[in-house]
Image (cartoon, rainbow, N blue to C red; front, side, top):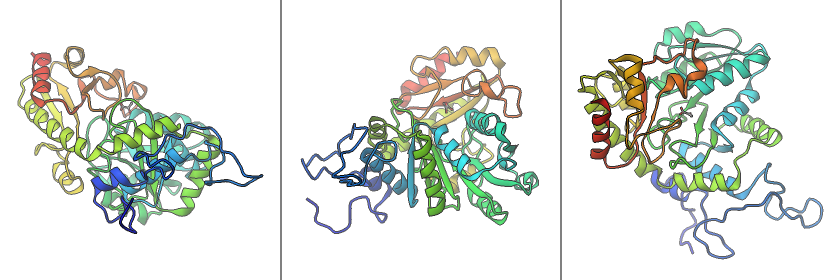
Length: 389
Ligand code: PYR
């Protein structure tokens, strides 16, 4: 039963309300509060072409995926959401939709290693060129643009060094030069940062991370407003088939319902940890935008509603100290990925960013990345202290 014409999770509802209700309607047949997982590859037709609910085959569409795509669009304030089998599958579909051989992409010089590998080695192989640049330096971005540049690819905060770049200023610059402005919003999540409202054209997510939030599902998403671009990407999603499976879509949608409270706790825990690490003699530098010493602190305070759960740190003792630290934790488990409720530690130069060794995106060997979970912060602080001792 509902007592209003306005559906729950409508655009006028607040973020946490939209996260819980957008696209997540009760099942009219049984009254189940949670929409079913439509674990079906195909859909019966009432005579040829007689589709009951608009669905024919789960590669082209599945109701569980539609529920997630509606929820994703509502979270980022976009007209369209598209859910993929991984973040890189989402990125690949977008790049294929907008680029032709000879085109050029400008991206951050500390982008996620997998994104750079996709742009440089996969799309590079069919004639796409790229220039990595410091996105914090608008003059350098402008100087990197070529007549063939089509896409400005922004990641903020960046992975792993937490550089913060000015989405509104970069979008203005990009649009002046006719570019598609893409923001990877994986680290902040839409709970903390809304790139479309700041002028971006497309938001990219690895939904594996904060959106799913429980390290139990791989997924990716695109959220955008442009109808024509949406049709192009949707066609590629259908024709190439890197869609999210029904169970994965369900798990992601379930995780999203607690995104708002999780991001508050991730941010509070990370702030306390960043402050403690900043004061620790074994630590050379802490990369966390919530610290007033971070060069992007003021910008992050304007552009984000909190500073998130990701921290990078440089150890004074170099590579040996960084490796020892990463391998000495009790609660922070040594693993790739991020954004789950449990804390993780990653050694980027040999793990998530190993593929960019020898390029200008190479991560220094004394850097360790923390994905701060939502455990009791006192336990996390004790774990870090013992690992640094
Ligand atoms: C990361 O840990 O950065 C991945 O995206 C896997």
